[in-house]
Length: 117
Image 1 (tube, rainbow, N blue to C red):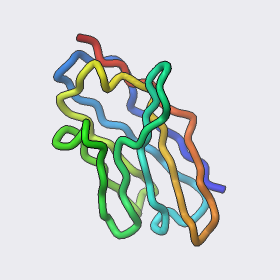
Image 2: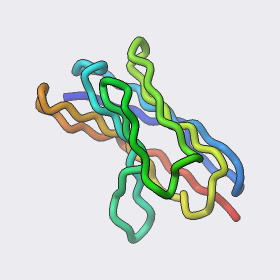
Image 3: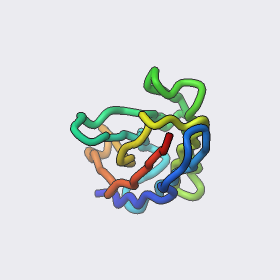
C-alpha cells in the first residue's frame, strides 16, 4: 500500500492561489498515476487533475487554465497549483495514487480548501 499525506489547504479569497502538496511513501512513486480529486458538501467526489507516470496530464473542464498538476519523482511528491480560485472550488481535496501493475489504489486523508467570495 501507499501512504499519502496532503498539505497546503486553507482559506483564501476568490481570485487567490493555493498550492497543494501530496507526499507519498511506499510503492513505486514513479510508476503511479497521481491524481487530485475533490468533494464538495453534498456532492460526489470528482477528478480535478491527474498526471500519469509519463507526465501526461488531464484536467476537469472547470479547472482548465487555472490549475496545474506536477510531480517530482525524486521527492515522491505531487503538487496542485491552483490560481484564480473561485468559491465553487471549495471542497476537500484528496490525493490518489493508482497503479494497475502494482495493484493499488490509495487515498490520502484530504485537505480542506475554502474559497470565500
